[in-house]
Image 1: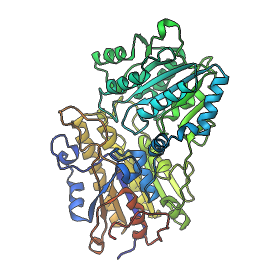
Image 2: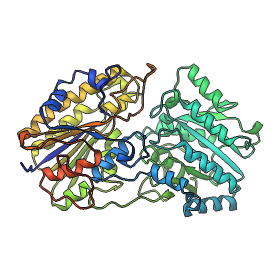
Image 3: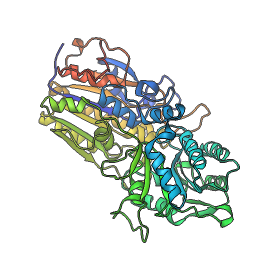
Image 4: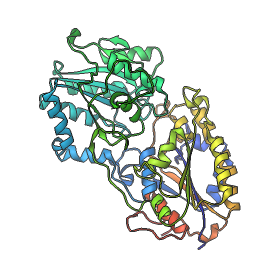
Length: 515
């Protein structure tokens, strides 16, 4: 079989496979080029959710999980699974970081704040973890427990927060003298990842200054926003009255704060605002950073806070193998997915490997949501990638197109169709350049989204899916490639190494897709 000197991995974020026609932006888009290569070249489908990517069974995949599995070449046990196991095995209560944190609270003012995404999607956080921690701190005699709810509507249906909040309030039960919901806000503000600090500042001011509209309870806040056509993701800063004014739900520098999100990318900005000594992105006024601030997982090498789940150090991942082989590699994406082709693809490594070049293409900032500009920065990515490919100096190029996922999350079907057509157009120009170089192109995705834009009730669907994703190998020597077998995302890296005639390390337990 032909051995290639260069390979390009193109990840169509949120591009899943489904036979359904209604609401399927992938199938209904005019995407003749993509459809053509899927028919003409070796093609298979890959599982991208649940146990096949290290998540609990039946849990939908996401971009972080997808890219880390692709880059690792093995199934990675995800933080969600680790935390679930620790709760199920009754070992989380013995975690030293958690124990030191609760002891410091009891030795201090007794006030603890639990903040994070209130959702059962499992993408960034999990409601069952929050409920476990509420009970843990109550049983360990924290004097005051405040909950700051970041609402989903993106990885969950747009108006699903009431279901999650009902479970949360039921868990609080008759313990309202010590446990209360203090604030609620959409993740659009509290979980920004695109340096839109004006959004983060609204969340910060809500958390620390109680700036926002005041409500008797969290359900009144939700329903008031709904009445103004504001769905969960965009819920405006909401302050919940505390025990007739006898409790103060604001975060103070001397309080303890636990951020329950275990996924890093959308947790970093609000963490910086609350915990860093040096912070210049907006005026915190007289607020001093929280000293006793811990997180569920590690967010960034530069952060000094403790975290509950220890990250694993993975050896011989794809980027490392390419580098150790003395070869050059290139990573490119726009802002929304740049961390995924770098940090997550490298399994939590911040620094590039030797001879790993990176290029960040800014995502458009002048639009509130990406359904208003479904092409996003795809054509700028396309132009920059083609320029690099023409140099013919990289053995591996990794490119992410964010359109199908980011536009899919808006729930706008027509815009999602345009997103698919955008990446179709981009690939129609990129792949001929790869073939001219006599290279090989692997087209795939990290999880589904745009193929299911309408749910079974006919309502807009904004979250990821459990559908498989495509994998297609495009080359001038298609007849030399054996028929591909169905697989999982962790099979991509060993398949690429085989195409490049590089030894597959033992740590990569994924398999070559034709073996």
